[in-house]
Amino acid sequence: MNVSESHIRNIESGRGNPDAKLLFKLAKYFETTPENLFPDLADVEICRSVSH
Image (tube, rainbow, N blue to C red):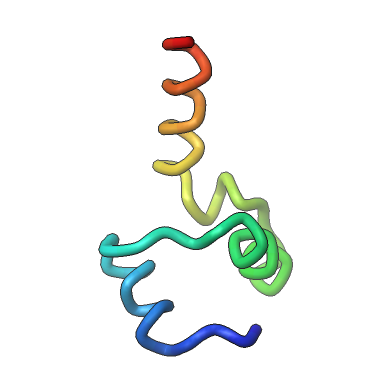
């Protein structure tokens, strides 16, 4: 996936978020959707859309 172990650890611990490209690569790798992998990120985007 061409991503460092430390970046993955930061994502897992909540200290970082994947960019869109990595998000879709991870979802494909785990055979799921980005929303299932990161439901909290999906909630943030919904809140941003509603508030505008």
